[in-house]
Amino acid sequence: MKSKLPLPNEQIYAPYKIDAVVEVLAEQGIAPEDSLKGSGVGVDKLYDAFELTSVRQYLTVCENAVRLATDPATALEVGRRLHLSAYGIYGYALLSCLSLREYFRLAVKYRRLATPPVNIEWAEHDETVTWTFVDPIVPDLSPRLWKFLIEQQVSLNVAHLQEIAGRECPPLRATFSYPPPAHAGLYTKYLGCHCEFDAPACELVYERSILDQKPQKAHRLTTALLQKTCDRLVSQEKTSSGLSGEMYQVFLTNPGDFPSMDAMAARFNMVKRTLRRRLQAEGTSFQSILDDVRSSLAQEYLQTTKMSASDIATLLGFSDAANFRRALKRWTGKGPKELRG
Image (tube, rainbow, N blue to C red; front, side, top):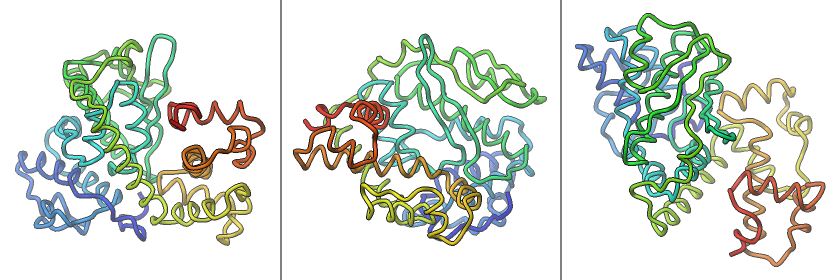
């Protein structure tokens, strides 16, 4: 990780993840001041409701943990302790969702609200559903820090799905793209499944049949209200944070005439490669931002105008209505008629 200092407008997250790391290390006899060293976060700010931190500050504390921890299960234990109730509105929106399929979708859709150190994707297959842990939000992490983050993330995902389902719900298997560590046996203990190393990707694999199950705290009105709040929070964060925020504003002010990646790079006086790298450091990409803007505009047009799906497709730059409908289903899980209500 090249810089430990927050980028402009990066400090937008409550320090609950930092606190979890500090708490686990404290149980190993490590002083909170040492755990927080170099992060810019004071011990007195860990429980401050108005304190805001960044992903980079969290990564600094994780780097300290890699260096200081005496227990090889540290990252796995941090993940297990990060209950959904610690995530505020985001966590309660997931707890009240109406199916596990919706949980998978919303966990990714609103991930920007969760101090995300790792990019995550989910995919539904014929017999399985997978979480794939793609790459770090901040590039150039050391292999040891990357492994710490993966251990924390897979433990967290397993614990969260169990919270949502209201019962034990272990994966079929977990795979990791690195060699087995000395404490590989702890992976099975925390994840409850067979673990494979030196695999092509880091993934958690579940039975597809779980997707239609109803979470124990599912509530139609609550989830609708909380999702609207999450949509508003994500929208505010997107348009006000870093280079990606500036790009959102450019796209939103040019509906129907979206600049290309080359044109956007030129607008910000940089080459395309630099633009791509800067966006990756903020946990996003040109296509993700464009898709997000198209999705927001599509839903606004469907809910506030009488334009046909074909007209909206043309306005948003799709070649035909069929491609627009497929994209809308991918973004929202719904078709034009459902969104129109």
